[in-house]
Length: 213
Image 1 (cartoon, rainbow, N blue to C red):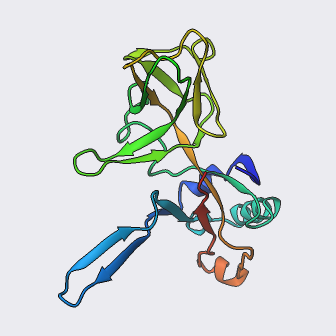
Image 2: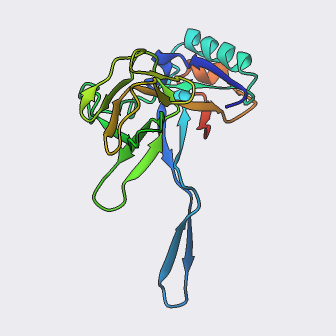
């Protein structure tokens, strides 16, 4: 991913923000009243407003400095989504069995981290490109592998690479557990802050949008 800074947006501000996933659906309504719905995007795209997390003048200054260093929309960065930042369900601890990321064939050493949502009707597999360093756990056939000796992982792409001699054999389930961030950028080149309104309790608007790998 070009023009990306591997830095996390101030966590104390991010944890009090607002936002969530966005889909792009095309709906055609016929004369009979029936509809045809088509998904324009294969993957959802998350949007956030960091302004809700800015509660002090110092926090506002921190965001302005972060915005300037990113040159507005030019450079992406990491964002911690409090609602969805773990491979585990709910508040459970991460385990190496959390998510299925592939099946071994005896030759393929590379596996992309993914998180799957749902499972009954149309499960959605979301590629995870920004795992948190030190958080990735991997198992093959239900047996946890050792980091470095058995596999390595790239925190900038979310790709797990098995070392020679440890490539998953044919039919072996490859699973992983991890914490992750969302790659985002500012969705504006202009931060408008009314200090008089801010002192009165108004919330500045600081829009962010997910960058697709």
